[in-house]
Structures are given as C-alpha cells and as structure tokens.
Image 1 (spheres, rainbow, N blue to C red):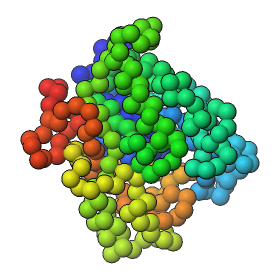
Image 2: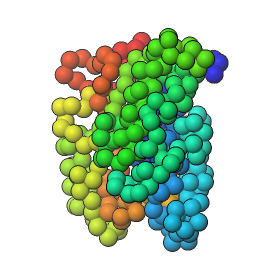
Image 3: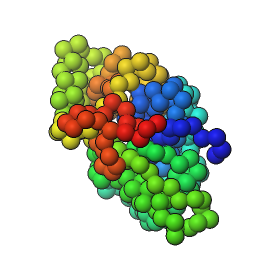
Image 4: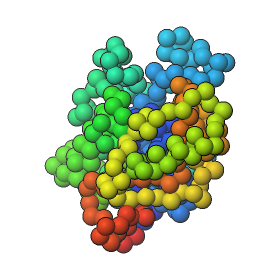
Length: 295
C-alpha cells in the first residue's frame, strides 16, 4: 500500500462474525477517525450452525455452501463498520473452519487447526509488512474460549508478528516491520456480570440467558489495561452483527448465537496489552490503543 494513514490497526480473527462481536465498536471508531483498520479472517466459518430456517441447507452436512454465504455477510458487516480493508488469510478458503473441539473436522486436511503454524504465518507476515500496523489485536492463548480455530489464530498472529520483524525472514515478503503494541481481546469480569444483571432485570425475547462463563476473554478487572469507548458507534456495531444473520440474532442491547441464549452487546470494548508500553498513567487504563505512540 502507498500513502498509508498515520495510524494503522490490524485485527486477526478466526471466523466471520468474531470481529463484529469482539471489536465492532473499536473498528468503527478508528475507521471513522481515519485510521487504516485491517481485518484478517482465518477461515470462512464453513462449519458453523445456521439460525434462519430458510438458510438451513447451507450447512456443511447438507450443501456445504455456508462459507461462501458468510463471505458476503462479512463484506456487509465491514460496510456497516466503515472498514474497507478486510482479507482472508491466504485468500478466501485457503484454510477451512475446523469445527468445535473434539470433532473429526479438527483433523481434516486443510483445516486451520490441522495446519502447521509456520505454514499459515507467512500469509499474515505478508499483510503485516504491507500495511505496517502499529497495533495488533488478537486472541489470548486459549482463543478466548477454547475453540481450535481461535487458539490457532492466536498462535499464527503472535508468530507472524515475530517473523515480520525479523530482517532475515523471507525478504521477498517485504521490508521487516515491528508492531509497537499487541493486545488481546478481554472483558472485565465486573463488566460481564453487570451486563448480565441488566439483561435479567430488563428481560429478553430469547428463550434463555447465557452465563458469564460463555463470554470469551473474561478476566479479572485488574488485568484489563485498555478500554475503548465505542458508544458513539453502537448502532454500527449492532448493524454489523445483524449482517451476520446466519450466526447472530440482535435484540436491542442484547444478542444470541445459535443456542438462543441471550448475552449483553458491549459497546465499550476491552483489551489487555501484552507487548509494548502502555500510554496511560500508572494504574490507569488506556483510552486509545495508539496511546503513547505519538500519533
């Protein structure tokens, strides 16, 4: 890319819809502020379930056309967030959704989980060296909640960040680049608990209510180092989530996945800085992922 914006943010996610749930408000905010927001999605989400009955035939055990449909959903979601640079790792369909832990799909040839990290990472190295992000957002080592593709996305993101900075690594993939700050997606436990308290008080049209343990990345409050206020972009986040109609149902400030269990829709999003220097005063959370970088 030429004439890159001053601030550049890279997010790595496992499947279409993960980005809107975890980071939709953050992405919309930075895109609106003129930053380059780049999303890399590692699979097409081919093994997902389908909520609308009229699209049930798309699933992997029937017509196996869900991946192509989710490509379109992701494009619509990115339009809602104002993000124009969204890519699939290695190109659409290069790595297949591995399914949930313990399924035979985990070991299928071409499954993301069944791919060596050093086979997948070069595709992300190429993106890093092209867009030269100062900030990377990824999952924690457990992938937030243990899904094989989320764990693999964490491994690939962290490995690619390391390799991209190494001048000796594949010079043909572009000039080396060091990412200044790396964050993992998080939710403070107190925020998650307060969200569920609001849900129970207000009631919901969904058949049931999820639990705090169902939210990926929940940790004790003290480990959260950044909070990004995306309130002004709440509508964009909700619209992006609605665009993933095969996977998500949104009802006001709440949403549910295919299990029909309601959970809060957060418009302030939280992160843990795991590499780099915080730009906030000691003991305080950053309010900007680019804090301290002079941008």
